[in-house]
Length: 455
Ligand code: TRP
Image 1 (cartoon, rainbow, N blue to C red):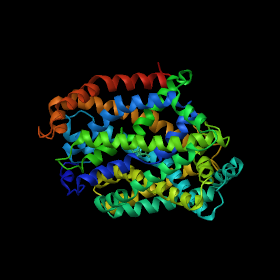
Image 2 (cartoon, helix red, strand yellow):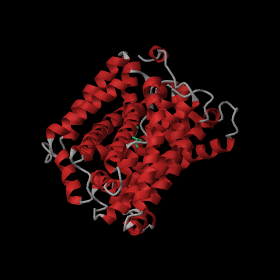
Image 3 (cartoon, helix red, strand yellow):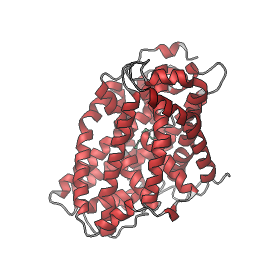
Image 4 (cartoon, rainbow, N blue to C red):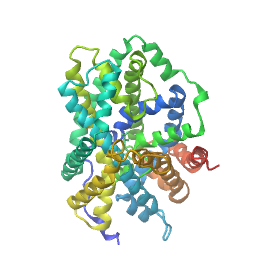
């Protein structure tokens, strides 16, 4: 199966800016606005940030370049791409299959966080959450997540919404949306930072974010930072391979990747600077966990004129950013169902949505009906997050790096990164290849073994 199906007509991204916008749209999402701040808060601040930065440069960036290069070369979904590029009877396609599993696990909890964002748009409009009193904002968040019906319905609304966009197709759906609204999100975050920096305890918040305390860095914290680096760049499970398959042949892969990484980092830092001064000023706990952003952001908006209106805008834009990321996650199973199982795109999309509505509900009900249902001591929400970010993505990263470093080889990689010699990226190609061949696999393996206490 598969070979002839790979030749199904594929629609690619239409312009160079479109490619950048869509790739950025995948990278920037709740990973930046929600996950990054709460993990940084829970893991001690600046020390975590530093490890995360190193992980992004040494591991995330090379794997992202590798994925896009492989995807563009094979012009196929991750499973077929590995099949096409690897020697006969070597099961590298399993990376693609594991990626599909990762996509479902991530989407299950991600769609619930997007559901909170959607619900917060409505709450922001009604004005009920605009307060600097932490008891008010905490109670509002808890009321939402502990209500099973609200959690479920919002999640299913999100899934329907995303499914609708996907049915419009790659170029129209993804490009059009991300292109227009990303700059606006950036501007609003900038405004939030300026407000936050005028708060009483701004200095304390900044010190938390920028003065490292290495005593908090344990092996499992390092693994979490590596997992976050993968998660934020959307790498380790085939999303970037799939997007790479839509890249044009004249696109500069390493430059695009570098820009995406830079912009992604900026958005995260802005989110951090917007949130931590407020955390300290209004007496929130930095380690509040997944609730952090939802309880803190309203407090910042309560400090400015037109705060309510701007807060509505903020959550709408967060929803847009999250939508771009979710679209890219869903693209992986949809394309696999389409190209490997012969389903039409609409059917593949529907199947994905239905599967997610089922699997995802276990995450939606994590704070209510299924509160006491735990595996390995974790709720389904935490378990799916842990398994995807701390196991599947890093493991995917290791194998993708090994594949490029030892199977695909320097010649193919160099041709991909220099566009067959058209670009002067020779040195970049060599450095990244060296990282992929030796550094990334070893580093991530050691971090995983230590972090999971297997060694
Ligand atoms: N990077 C996105 C974010 O920060 C989430 C995401 C999209 C993702 N596609 C992915 C994470 C693929 C891991 C793998 O919100």
